[in-house]
Image 1 (cartoon, rainbow, N blue to C red):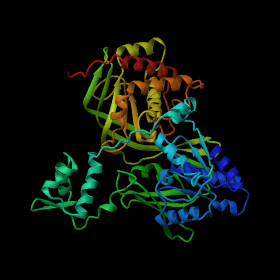
Image 2 (cartoon, rainbow, N blue to C red; image 1 turned 30 degrees about the vertical axis):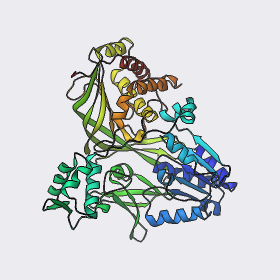
Image 3 (cartoon, rainbow, N blue to C red; image 1 turned 45 degrees about the vertical axis):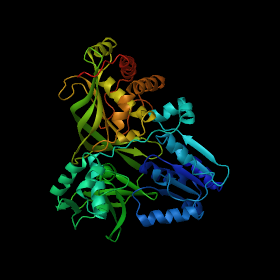
Length: 496
């Protein structure tokens, strides 16, 4: 891994360096690889990981060592992007484009403070968005920061705000409108669930409710899971935490959980107690979760048509996601060691999404050229997810997708993209407004990739629950170009 090699090289030359990664597992792997490349001795102890999920005292100790100059290298997620004084650094390495122009410059600015020179490197991953950035560096260097996406009326977020407000002071009837039009209905729901009580028309927080314990600052999913490690003496000790949304992906049975550069094997996930049990594990592999998605569309608030059955829609979706298995990969070489099935509960939530119903002319085009219809849709779905962060302030992990040869309730081949958060945060809505550009970029990405049948840089997705099958790269490129062209022919909304 290039980032680990560069980090080790800089540490050996006493260059204080921070490596930013996109995921917790990636941060832990880079630490392991970098330490292996350093000579035995104290230098290995001067390279640490820093990420969400560490206990507060662990994070404070790392911050202190970094600020005091004891550490020469730290590998971090966005948890160290801003808000924490980490002292003077000499170099920044970004292992993957962070998904936002603003984040790129924020991370780059972590080094070279106090008028000192610094080195900043971006190492592209084998993902669609990274390869697009490498082919179009002007996108990164010449573009201003994006507009932030946030939906304050998301019921999952607003419910937390209401509980926190009621914790400070009871909410008076005339204050309800300050929280937006959905607040009265949500307060009734919270009252029904006994989170708040109503006395003389005022809403009070129930005495046994502590909202800070229910709400995560980094996630809208609420309470998480505790991770305990069992030592050789049989005693269990709290090792870390993981939020509810990520728990099934990170600490499912059989997962390799990486923490401070050490590997642990998850032996048990207790759903009722909300805790995972791990044991030290000398693994030469890591695990990737495989997620399967199903969607049912609701009422489309926008329904645009271009004739022949081709439709572009925006509206609410009912999503069911399930971690159906995991893949083991050899460290460093990335060799596929096989897939293991899992039987975990599915998670259902409502969110915002967009969907493209493929028309008869597009199906005829694919058929005449001998393309696999579902493979073309599936490959294009992956490519669209890859390039959407170039146009909308999000990360591709914030977006879900699924393709159907015959979509539920519609009976036509359809591609769905949706916000990966309950209630939605505005990603699909913003993407819908720029769908023509996103389709064109997806087509360009797939066309420009030199691979023969599809790879992680264009149409493959590491977490695809269908094992990246079927995929038709050529069909995806042709379909993307056709849809981008026809987007300009979109008629007025269908109900006008």
